Image (cartoon, rainbow, N blue to C red; front, side):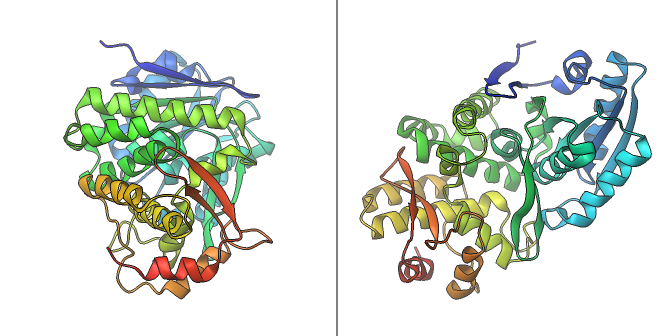
Length: 368
């Protein structure tokens, strides 16, 4: 068996990311972060039937005396709510979880965010192990300790920073990932090239076919590289007061689209990765409009995302004015007005404050 790739995240609360096939069956690795005798597996209605029993069996084989419970929430971004967060806490209570208990977040970003927030709040903070099963969660939400739930007013408005004790990414779970969800994850992979490394962007352009066909070597390499980029940024800025904000490239636009569509990504609306794809194109177009970067770089990014079969235009029927109103409530907005992560061209991002709303509206109104 090929040994897993490993990425270490440093800082005040260091942890290791393991990436490879078959990790869900490695009980000693999964159980190593568990300090006490209680564990809650949090998953959703899509993932739990596939993998929850395997995870529980592996944990019990390594730690026979541990008490394990499950909280299975409905699937979908629209379920990342205070109500389900409360249900998760109730399950911890029924388990009798003590301060040395551990939560296992088995699923995509919604599960990871909600379970992480519950772990951050139970008894003022217990351990969490992120076990991502989607590409997007493997390269983004499982790393860095940002946890949250959504409100009708906006995405991720209630949350906490709570780093995991470990991240265990079993790439074999990607075999059951729908094509649409795989592409959504590739949007976040492309983001790292866009903001941090033009060479990685070129690698993605050359390996589009391998990634879409789920080539194991290409996917594992892309995941590990993405995690290294994010780990380096998180180490420098664990609480998003500086460089870490760059990881939100495309997200101000993307979150506005998600919120305006009512987080209906499992239906007719865009999911998170798709919304970020559109958002990155809009951010690149806004950068060109403001004279920060050439139009040619925006064209290049749009071509890559389109080659990955991702959307690049604002969905029909969404009002630019309504999207702008959503952005005014974004967490990245400040007293000096709208704040965006823009770029100076491929591989070079920056935070720009006080962006003229008229410029934003013009970009929102454009079609490719």
